[in-house]
Length: 213
Image 1: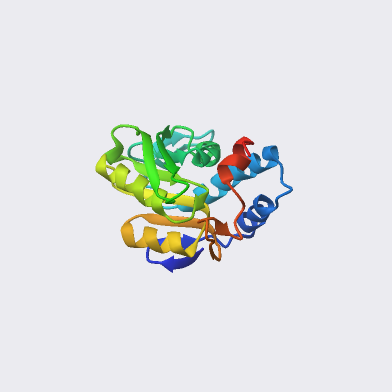
Image 2: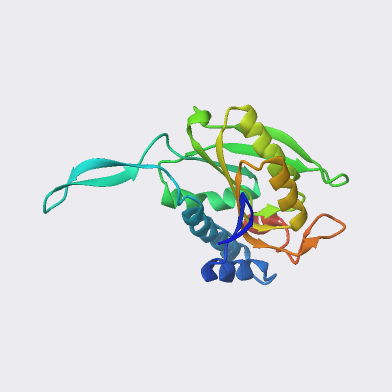
């Protein structure tokens, strides 16, 4: 991983970069796009969760009794930003099947590009959980910043944000707004265009995941 800021990391793993290239290709169909987003959720989640706390318990193997580590504390909370963030959830759940799943609904005003919240449901007690927020795209950063603001207002403390691609403008905005939240990016793209789309980007992730172009 490449460290961009104190709390911002860009993945350099070749498998992650390979799969992002598949997503960028406009000829990639809905079924493959959805599958690759799920795979990236697993690969990126594996890396982002490397610091989960563990504790040792005593178990009996077929050979002898021994002490071995398991995850400790409250179960993980995965919180996708609707709707595109849903695509990354199955991959992370494959790693942590006992995780609880919340949802935050945001939509972007087509004229102002500002995010608006329309739904929020978080697992309880949220303040005792490690929270992984997912959204494939970090463009202006507005939705990401507002979603984390909302989680903090509800009591969330230990928060990680995972996105597949990000624009420099959005990354900088997120870093300034939430320097205490770890941000993990699959690839840092070049810029936002005049319509606030990431360039070179991969199009509208939600439309491509759900086939609603």
